[in-house]
Amino acid sequence: MKVLLLENISGVAASQFEEAGFEVEALKRALDEHELIEKVRGTSILGVRSKTHITAAVLDAVPELVSVGAFCIGVDKIDRAASSERGIGVFNDPHSNSRSVAELAMGEIILLMRRTFEASTRLHGGVWNKSSAGAHEVRGLTLGIVGYGKIGSQVSDLAEALGMRVVFHDVAHVLARGNARAVSFRELLEISDVITLHVDGKPQNQNLFGEDEMSAMKDGACLMNLSRGFVVDHDALARHLKNGKLAGVAVDVFPQEPESGGAFSSPLQGLPNVILTPHIGGSTEEAQQNIGQFVSARMIDYFRSGNSQLSVNLPQCHLDYAPGSHRLTHMHHNVPGILRAINDILADRGINIDRQVLDTRGPLGYAIYDINQDCDEQLLAKLRAVPHTIRVRVPGEVRS
Image 1 (cartoon, rainbow, N blue to C red):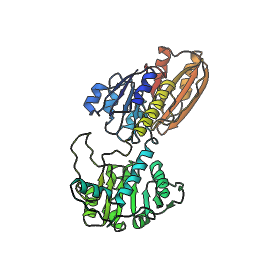
Image 2: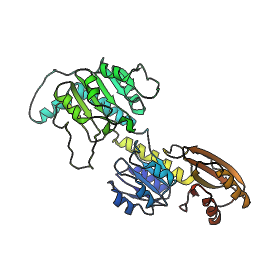
Image 3: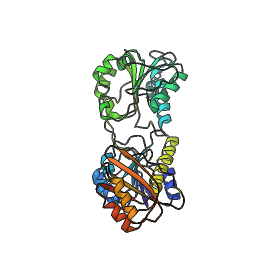
Image 4: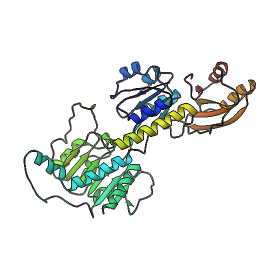
């Protein structure tokens, strides 16, 4: 029962795994594919953040792997299809760092509108330039939020508390918070004094904000991106800053992000009223502790009980455990006849099914059984021999 945690995941996670009886190895850095293939062998649970790529080759190197945890929101660095094909659960935390990102967004709105960062940089260089030119209160300004999910809606609440008018655009039908108003994307571009982006990592959001969108923005507006690096064309952004179309920019995510301490280059460097931060939107101690606690708890529960609720790739199954029962799980391709084959095997062994639950998700089917006898190796071998079986597991054990 070994856990491997990479990328300086909060010690709260390591503590929870250790208290649950796991042997934990925690590394501060990400690993490339070759390093990870060597390191991951014998691991039951693997935890990463936003740098490590979990490829099919990595998964093939560790057949005993039960689950992968993304101790962040995004799971785009994890091959979820390959994980599903191997019966590996993938978990993340879509909630715990949303407040941290929202607070940073609000702070940067104020800094941009007051040109505070620019004034601070000049003063660090020995230049005293006390001026009100181009500095504005945020009260009464219009904030446009693109992506009104967990983070965008919290930004909406905070902005209204400061007296801003809030408009938003989202591809889904979502409920407005407070006095916020849903508008078309085009209208949002044209009327917002500040636009902040909080979209997800879906491929359709690549280059969402480019030359056309910036040209349609209000003259002198500010743009912020705390979502994904590939959402904004940074060359176009630099051009519109230089020609005065945009008055300020705050960027926390970039198309190419180096490891901590690595060399960084961007066309936005050195431009006035530009705030650049190294992907720290969710990097508060509170957020990382909450994420560490949430994801590790979900992975421990999945390992012990087989309950797959909140997995990003598996069918959502939950079965309350009753003392005296013996649990097993069966993951398979979603084709007819699987449950009948499993039930026949159990009946032939004189095994009674106390409880069972089944759910499907696309090509996957997942069943949890509580039976009245222990699962010996002969029974497990027969269940694994059922056509279209992906994985049979006895929750709480490594023999799978």
